[in-house]
Image 1 (cartoon, helix red, strand yellow):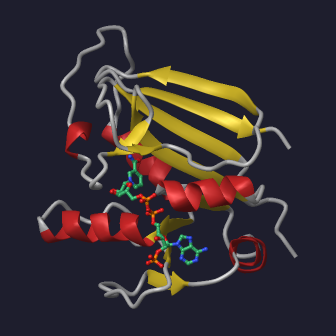
Image 2: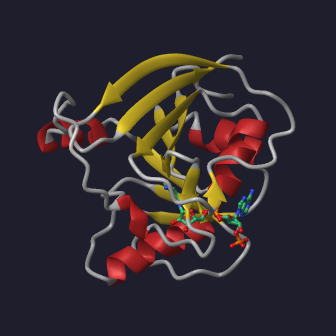
Image 3: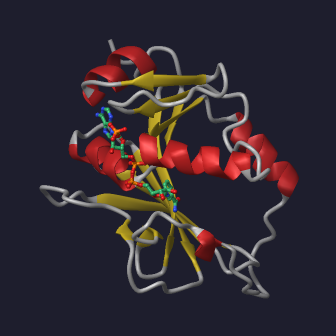
Length: 188
Ligand SMILES: NC(=O)c1ccc[n+]([C@@H]2O[C@H](COP(=O)([O-])OP(=O)(O)OC[C@H]3O[C@@H](n4cnc5c(N)ncnc54)[C@H](OP(=O)(O)O)[C@@H]3O)[C@@H](O)[C@H]2O)c1
């Protein structure tokens, strides 16, 4: 049975024109250098505390491969010691014990495996996995961080949704670095 206390969040950062990565998967454009004087400061202590509230991550294999690439360049592993579930039908390298691979039905996985165990379930992308999560009606919340840049082409935030998905705008925050964080609740 699904734990009614559990919460599925999709979070991604995108350019103002709605892309999460370039066509070839690069996210080099994410290092922006804007200044929005009246924005909030992203306090590292607050970010650390917030990250503690996330109980597990779910991601597609391409996002996992990007994370491995960052790690091999010495940029660290973004998901701390939290259980990280990677959706894939391939045999991928498992570089740490917290990583687990899954192939199969996403509804079954979220409702029977994740929801009974984890309270805050965080879908870290990419588009394929996040869109499937929304299409299947599994997401409770969408967090969309808009970066102050246009990149004109790339991988879209959402793809092939077969219906409209109504949202409720729950929170808006603008930061000193020009990032605007939007939080929406999915209207069921
Ligand atoms: N801007 C951001 O916040 C953000 C966030 C996340 C990712 N990204 C970027 O976006 C790019 C990748 O996104 P993407 O949408 O192309 O790929 P993705 O969602 O990360 O991965 C797609 C892959 O996941 C696997 N998959 C999906 N559903 C599955 C299921 N139900 N069962 C088993 N496997 C499943 C398949 O992998 P196999 O082919 O292995 O079977 C599929 O090819 C990367 O460059 C990444 O860095 C950006």
